[in-house]
Length: 253
Image 1 (cartoon, one colour):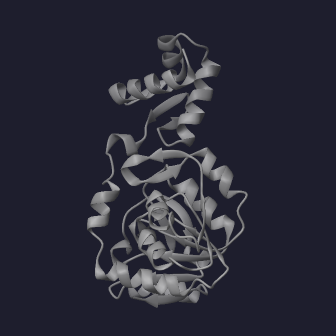
Image 2: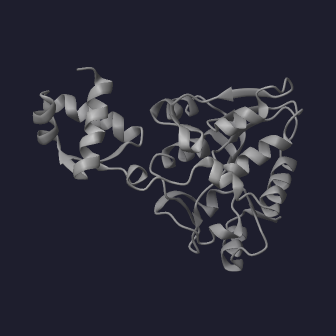
């Protein structure tokens, strides 16, 4: 049996049971426990499951599928457009920028058309915005395609980002806590976002007022790591002040 078939059967088994031990999977697939451990490590990195002590459990991403990119895009508002305008204004010519996944970064990309810059991304919607623009040098990260959210994730994307030295990263999130923690609710995305933060000299967080406090339990960074926060008028004032005291600049769209 090929590794891809084993991976598919492991995920199918977890969809049925919710969780399984290494021993159970090894016996059902008739392979060694060491082989199963390697399979689980790969699937964990790709966000297909969550490694547990002695086994694995189904990833929350697979249990409760997130809204598709198309649904998220339908929720674009004038506020998101305004945030994108502020973000694009921060990009100097001849700079190297990283664009995170999400609908807001797609809107930023749209405003960067015709600019002599380099854009690095795992966002396939950004690819669609810039693929025919000769002025922009477009670099696409590798990885596993998440079709429902038009993004590239997994160990290949993380490895590619370790080779990147960018001027700016435009980061999205699902929540900004009052204590200054910037969080996300998708295990498959969090390592990619953290690698993006490490790849860039400056971090620009794009988070509308709905993200204060938002949702999510996976810490990406703190507001002390954010150089500029772009948000909207209804964002929590105390959290914004926390950002300013930590040395960040706050832009209200």
